Image 1 (cartoon, chains in turn purple, green):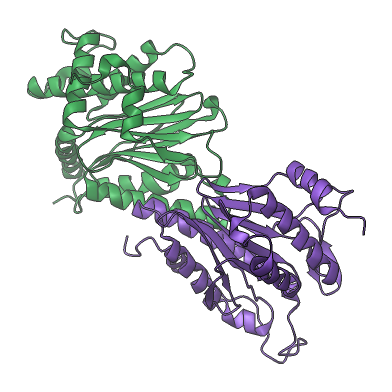
Image 2 (tube, each protein chain N blue to C red; image 1 turned 135 degrees about the horizontal axis):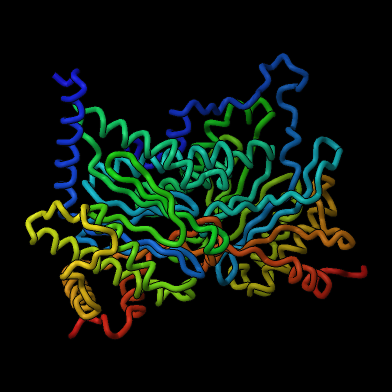
Length: 263
Length: 274
């Protein structure tokens, strides 16, 4: 009762440790080397009903593709998702802690944690993770997207690996493939037929698919679409109704009609 | 002076007396399974009595609010740490009862130099279909029971047994709608509440436990008495309903039924006369 619904404190009281393995500088990993972890592309953009969040599904270690079915857009509760770029082990653990934190808070305090409270919770975890992030063994640079019920609007925030929090007013990107699509997003939002926030749901899904294909074109660590294996990016929308995944059948249909080109 | 066995037994007996008195003000809680989930019902004055514990587990409590809060937090802590360290599917009502609640309550009850918990608790756990739903109830002395289909907690064990018997006679086969479940639960609640009031007015008849099972008491309330009592309760207290809804998307199955929706579901018969 004394911890005011703080699940992380409860875990710490029970002996949980945040000490992720990290190098002391004398190991084989040279300090300052670009960590392999940002090898991915995730993005979130506001459209007319809320926020569309997408991520490719490739997990890599160096130049090896480890897995092609990773879901990097993780549902934390009914109204928020975290799209992860970074070391998956750390990122999945953070998502699990957050999921339990939000539930624990709601159930113990009998009210939902505010949107700002959820943002702070993620920021705190990233700060705890700073030693591993700096050592290159556990950096995570996530995007947090949610529907703020109090203000009834979709919101996007992105973080650096040390926990600094920035609001992405219209969109946010993260991961190694993100520089490619950041420029495209900027251009489309500024000089496209309409600003991004006016996109319909279908237009937003198509745009996210096209952007992830573009990222995959120029970034070896970003997986695109594997048509034969029926593998499509993970795309979720966050609206006033909550978080809903866009089903594979729909992605497939839109991919075939609006994304495939014969150039 | 409690070193002598006789004194200790006497002290525990006194505790029972004291605790039985403490539940005189309490309202019963009814929980039952239906096709789409589990319904928990009670009437309360202000302080809620029904709570969410974990993804598929709800709690109904009678007793002192401070004690209930303490036990509730204990359950929340255990459930969430377990769910995080293992998996949410490893958090079951059974484990919460056997390894957290029951030992705590029993120890407090028997440590006669300390205050016992003034609490009776019902845990409901929703499964993938009605026959996998589980109910656990625990008394103030730490003795607990497992039930299928339905469960109640009430001021005395004899009232509890009568409410359970009523549930069994009124209900033949699985309940297919929330409306039917609510109707039955509210009537069972009214029966418990009426029996409680009449037991009180008969000046704490202690012999009721000694009556042969099934013996009809002369003042066993009929349908009309139940409906009148429900009307009275609706006007004086708030009807509290919680659901463990197995049709809800996502991992958390608990939701409170908003009062206006509850009233719509109550049959016209039970609507308060305006």
